[in-house]
Image (cartoon, rainbow over all chains, first blue to last red; front, side, top):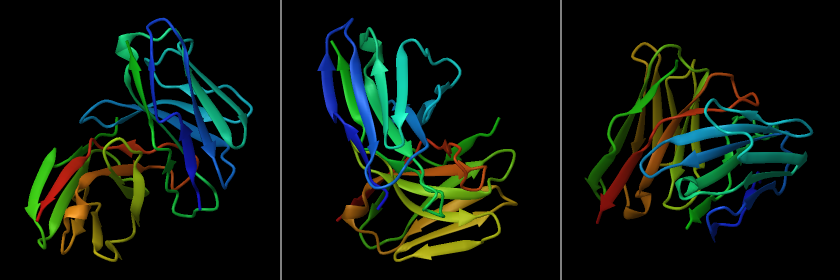
Amino acid sequence: GAVVSQHPSWVICKSGTSVKIECRSLDFQATTMFWYRQFPKQSLMLMATSNEGSKATYEQGVEKDKFLINHASLTLSTLTVTSAHPEDSSFYICSARTLLDSTGALHFGNGTRLTVT
Amino acid sequence: SQKIEQNSEALNIQEGKTATLTCNYTNYSPAYLQWYRQDPGRGPVFLLLIRENEKEKRKERLKVTFDTTLKQSLFHITASQPADSATYLCALDMLRGSQGNLIFGKGTKLSVKP
């Protein structure tokens, strides 16, 4: 149980275009989802906390107008990278917790490798 | 602010040996400390959680210890296998499994040679 599906797994786009990444909780409801960015040999960097039915909470230094997050339902959150530039190339991962899991473990998607050319 | 360090970026060991990974943190002890495995190009996968009032937790070939005095957790893999090769992340949960985020270390890349 507690499966998080992330799509697409990789995407290549041209500079200036926008890319949408989807994160779905398949067998549980996630009122909160988290979006991360990860560089090689670096830790997971939290970008924002996505709350169902309300605005996302962004970490300091993360541009909310560039990284648009929508959490329209209890099973879906989306991250849209707008006007992408090569420096946005990275590995983006989402995660969620379920109250059914008493360990409090985070359940992660398999990530999206974004390459901006 | 809370900081977390994992002892080494990479650890190479021989198959069959015990791998020991270290996670140190500063300031306040977390309510829970979690360990994850991450394979290249994949999201992390939860392995074990240990609570602040627990000294040790085991799961099959995995063992985790938690010393709040030293502000340290050790993660052991006994009888290591090449399939154990991956990056292992420790994470601090300050909020007792509530809906908050975790604080992640950079990870230690373990390579088990046959």
